[in-house]
Image 1 (cartoon, rainbow, N blue to C red):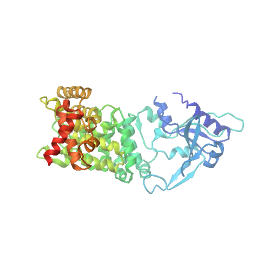
Image 2 (cartoon, rainbow, N blue to C red; image 1 turned 120 degrees about the vertical axis):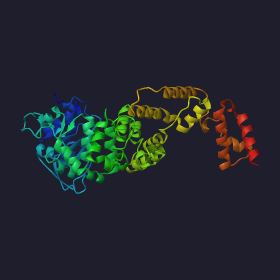
Image 3 (cartoon, rainbow, N blue to C red; image 1 turned 180 degrees about the vertical axis):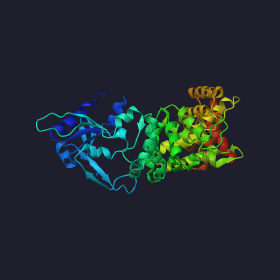
Image 4 (cartoon, helix red, strand yellow; image 1 turned 120 degrees about the horizontal axis):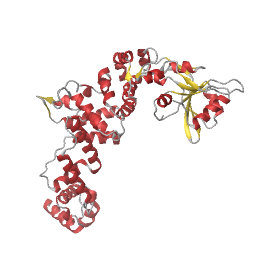
Length: 450
């Protein structure tokens, strides 16, 4: 397949070549092009030192001590990194010392996997001569791509001791790129998986998000369990392995979890994360074959895990909410007021996510697609939301200011209690939701208190 970087990238490379420097596109962009995928980034590498890059590109900015310069070209920001070799990975994540180099081959030798250790470009051309860009593949990355194999560059244990995140990336790549981890590389992950504990929560969360964005996250999740990474990420998730589930013959609780994650549509990342965590409370609540209160316990465990992973607060709150309510029940005998109370308890914005989680949970339990009761509840919820119904305080025809002005109330528990009681009555009977009626009811409540 022909490698043709975008014009702004080519413009940067041509300026490097014209200035007597090597210029290459490196890493994941080459891998993606050869796989027929659209690259997200076009990272570049050169023998030009950062100071020289700032001379060649006056609008550029030196981003960090690792030799990366951000260059603005045609309205986009592109990163160029000086060839380098890394030394002394004492924290199992980033090199404490780097050396700039002059050859692309040395730069590629420090990369994680052979499929990411390819480059396309050219060394500095002879004076006045043309650059002849070509693929540089010293570690057999293209052959590994053709064979759908993920192999570490050089000694895999050494690569993972340098940067423990590479192990998490490996299982993510297995899922997102549909490749098989080569045996020695997989064995090295199993041997060094405990080093994942040195990684920051943000790094782990970012990789987990990417893994959950795969068509079949179960591929990477099962590898996480097999290699020991899952145990480092979450003891409670790892404890699901081997725990009887009694839903699909031969499946344990972990099998159910990964099936549930796969069953969530890929465009619902928050629900996929909730699916991963929805039964996280079961191992600690198991007693005599039952998992009493596992939803409430699981919500607390999920909250602590997401806090450790530094998940954005809105995401964490939504996921914990879904975990806490995923065991909701529906009785067809409910009246419309019962449906409205359900909507109020779950919240308008969370309803579709919760229904999607329940659908996935059913599929992960071996049930056929579609559920009569769930479909009926969905229909009834839609009907209520389409009507002029009261679901929260904001829907009431009066508010606290009205009660203060008309009844002489002041801010405090009594005001809040009356508003909540009015809300409950309006949920049960929306026809009372007019200002005069609510004021009469509020006055009666206040008189009863006295």
